[in-house]
Length: 223
Image 1: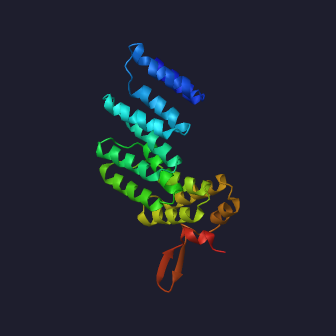
Image 2 (image 1 turned 90 degrees about the vertical axis):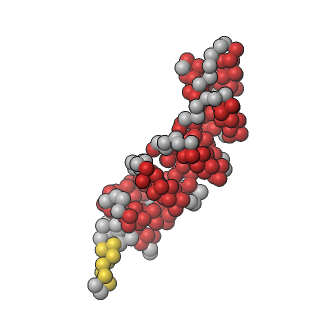
Image 3 (image 1 turned 120 degrees about the vertical axis):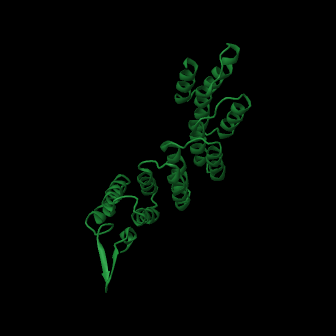
């Protein structure tokens, strides 16, 4: 644990070479490198853009019989998406599921954020739907996705996602509105936030003859 903490601290301080040297030194000192030590150095590599080195450590973990935890996969998935290596990130998600490792809210957040920013919102929703039957439904997953899309300026995709949430009955529509307003406000889209707040979007209905339909979030972008 002492080595893990030191490696983690050096990594966060940007002293990558020293962290790696300490990791290699462990064997000479007779210390077994466990998943905590591996994860600390993998995280260090991933955060400084050295994904190939991080992947080599992942392979070494396997060769040494060291457990690859959900945290190991979360680090790699997040790092690969940041490097725009989207297909590799998805393969690691599938590998994790195939190994019977239960996803955590953090691991799904890493996946959904990467997918949303790469324009694959529907894929993120599909994976979330696949997790629900097995009892894994990260709380606030959709909220995180709306925030990510708004922050990245993908308002149209955020609207489609919000409409999908309400249509599926996953969340009370008023709550989705509140999440959306906050996301728009925090991303600097104040005018859209005010427009949404004073509209019937998500909670009101339009009537055409005898047919009543909920006002969709996508009308937020109408002039």
